Image 1 (spheres, rainbow, N blue to C red):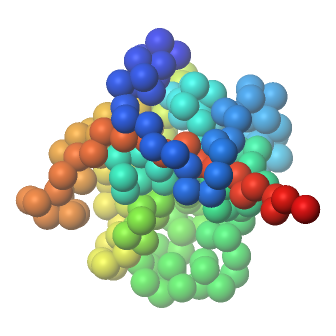
Image 2: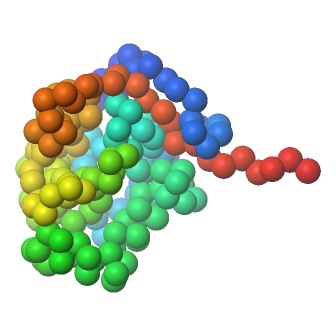
Length: 191
């Protein structure tokens, strides 16, 4: 995925003020490298370019995209989001709900919805090896099956977040909202 495409997308979306204050700075390449080293995971190239250009936030008024390097989950932290989903209690609940303990253990959550769905990569399901593009799956909040959504992060953004691909799960009344709310950081109280 080219930086130019994400810039074009970013500028085409309606931008809303972050819910928690001023927007976060975008993810820096050195932070992405540190994340990859710490978690021993190559991030998809399209995802890395996206968070460098766009940053974390809410896209399409429904999907929350997380990125490395932020202080807490509410401000878009991929680390906090990942650690939450790797906690023993959550792993146990997900195995009970969805089955497939091996998948649940290796999945890498990168996005969620305001409806409680979790979107994950499967690092064992590499669709484009050179760019480390993994299959994107959904763990729906209201179902007990894991479903393939997209074959790359780029397809996830284009067809699921900003296309009609999510209507498979949300129903025929699904409406695409072309807006982006950057993740905000909590502002310290004055005084």
